[in-house]
Image 1 (cartoon, protein in one colour):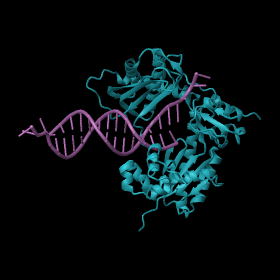
Image 2: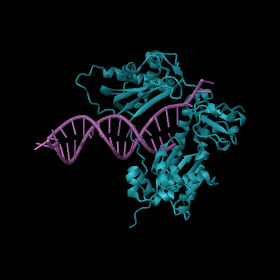
Image 3: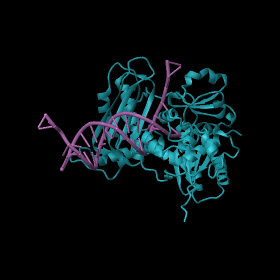
Length: 424
DNA sequence: TCTGGGGTCCTAGGACCC
DNA sequence: TCTGGGGTCCTAGGACCC
């Protein structure tokens, strides 16, 4: 019996953040639109029209103000509450088309279609049509026998501006020609460093890499590179992972809206980040026994630079906010040096383990039951009334670190007060 | 004036053990 | 004079992803 042939679809939302904003402002259809990163810093999403007038991904917005103004580009601050919610809706629609769905990122998912369908293009078109109709977000779909090839097929679907938004690289007679058109840098798993190495050796496109000796690739790019070669040949090395593990690390960091110098301001910011990180940790029902706190000055500024981090091993694995704050402050006091202009800080919670198999220390001085009650009450209140309604005193009330978000759209779908108001 | 944030996996090398 | 060797575990850092 022949082994079951693998078949993967990669569904990718087109210019996702822009599409989310457009869905609630249809008058922006056909116009250039961009979405900015936190603090209204860099361009992180562009509509087709914005790409066409030469706006590059990742450039700082202040560097291209005249270009933005001249072309009357609609600009939005990032609105994760909105994008996250629409993402969930897209994923929920996709889950109806496969028994095995892997949510790969906020705007992408792999679907395992092995043995499921015969007419791939028809099926893909049906998926795209349904998502557009039910959630209002346009998607592109690549279909192929491995994930790496599905990624490539997806790029083709996007670049060729196919009317169907679906490209099937499975049994494609132009297979080699398509691969030849893909520079190695555009292959999933090949970044700047590996691409530089490959170009130096005359390996320029996906077809070249496919034909490489895998032993030689393994020697220079490691096992990940070797798998990429196999995947390009149609040998699947990465199955669809529909059972996401809990996160192993949780990080919460932000650049401040302006530079801060006083210890108290930095403490208020960083303990606030610690509070959010602890919320995330409880949300996935994990505990941790180590945290790293870090601070940094503005790496783009001329003045003296200071970047440093301190890791603290806590005596007992915990997810209680008060304890996390306690150790964050200890770390911060070690880190702080007077005289620097701080721009960013954050906390990384490491070595997360499932709650419940908690190891008790011999001299545990904390009243854990009481803490448990307090954190549950705070979590429940904030879930209901909005993040930050109940705060710890140390977080302060000034929010001098507050992000700049001058072009924020409403939280149309997650906040009753910001629902779209339609006047008839 | 203004330059994002949050992850994963792999590997080399040090620490430690017998 | 001659100064083991092999295994495991952990961590930091590199490379990649969105």
